[in-house]
Image (tube, rainbow, N blue to C red):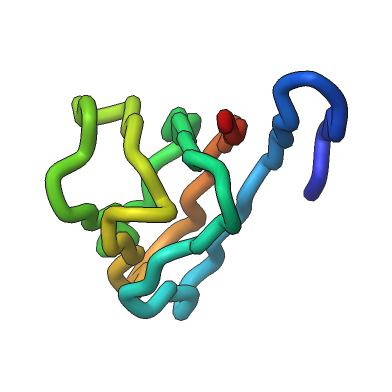
Length: 95
């Protein structure tokens, strides 16, 4: 669910993401033409099993906070095997 977006000065977006049982995201990058893309994911509720965020060399990663460059670093989510995972995702791009 998109919570906000700003296409001006520093373009940003904010999403509330829900991953139910069976959800997964294959390894990928999110290219952006001529800009650097940054994203902070805050894990609000972890899945009961599975649903682990994986990223090559994040800028910062703790149990609940993941800060990374989605345009450069391959990232994914393992399959949620039980429960539901909720993530607040805030991203922006810079020239």
